Image (cartoon, rainbow, N blue to C red; front, side, top):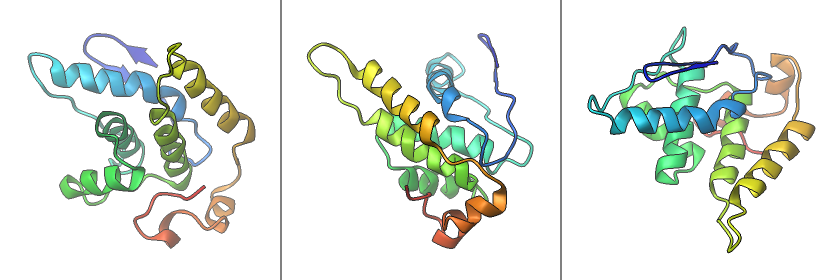
Amino acid sequence: MMNNKFSFHIRAEDHPNENLLQYFNHGVRFIHDALASDSGAVFVHCAMGKSRSATLVCAYLIWKNAASPAQALEQLCEGRPICEPNVGFAEQLEVWSNMCGVVVDNDGNADVERQKTYEQWEKHRFTGEVWEWEKRGTGKQQGREVAKL
């Protein structure tokens, strides 16, 4: 991962086992800062422009607008209809949505709760071959819906 004033780069494969969730917090803040800068623009891309980049933009929309993963993907597809996070990324968007929904308590412990959610997911998450992910009944069999946990 490279992060500076002008770029934020994540080296990741488009595979359901790839952990993009670990980059969401930095990624959404980079997008937010870029949109708030003088240029007011950001370019998010990956090789095909449909899974990895779409996942990061959906993560931003979830964080910024309190959108559900399905709502974020629907909004993104209005501008780029081919966007479709792979089933593992879709699951990570569900976890991210839960992490973003954590309310700060009187002691300011939201970060602790978010970290617990992440660690629980990381400890118990499914990993397998693509066909095993598809066998679990997520992804394209659900239409445009994001994977259900």
